[in-house]
Image 1 (cartoon, rainbow, N blue to C red):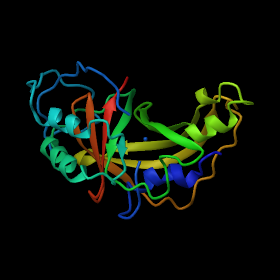
Image 2 (cartoon, rainbow, N blue to C red):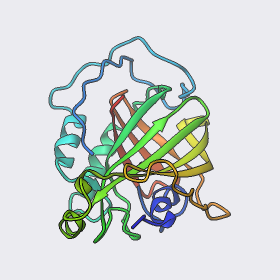
Image 3 (spheres, one colour):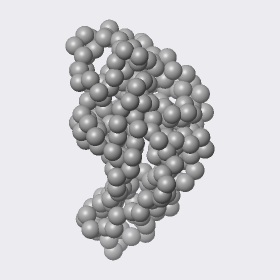
Image 4 (cartoon, one colour):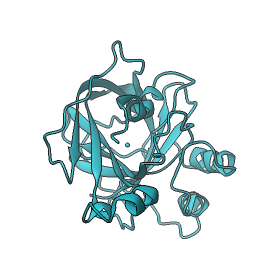
Length: 242
């Protein structure tokens, strides 16, 4: 079963309205990004790079944040750790590097609730949410699913390799970076790709008008990134993977 557009879209809706929800998976990764501390008021993410290196902290707030997230994939606001993770994210806020283009980021944790079942259900299981900064004007958010264990058990006798099947749902956006690192989004299109069905699946219709406006980047050291909804209700923590 292909999850509905509402399930995908829930993530992005949370960028603009209070009662919506979340979303675009832990990846081991070391970054060589360099910079000095950047004031939100002095710099825009439209700039390309900085040369000064920040001091490395072996026991700093970033390390504590990653330890707090641990193996709790995605979060979706239902974890008892949400309050402490939000506090640790606040401790990092204010250090913002320019957003590199292109780059790809994987969601580690978010504090918005999964009301519409983005994580999957009896038929499918969410395995990653990725955000790709394609260039200075376009970004994409992709949800990747695999068959649930129940489906594998029920169909493996007549569907060879069902456990390796993957389904990707992608929403494409145009974006602009404004003052105070605010990212304004405008939906451009959607697509579905399946490893068993190829790229010939029908595109998804998007609702109109769209009930979100964007997000603000409150921390980015080139390796870890923290975004907040415009109202500040929910946060999204990403790890850079490319």
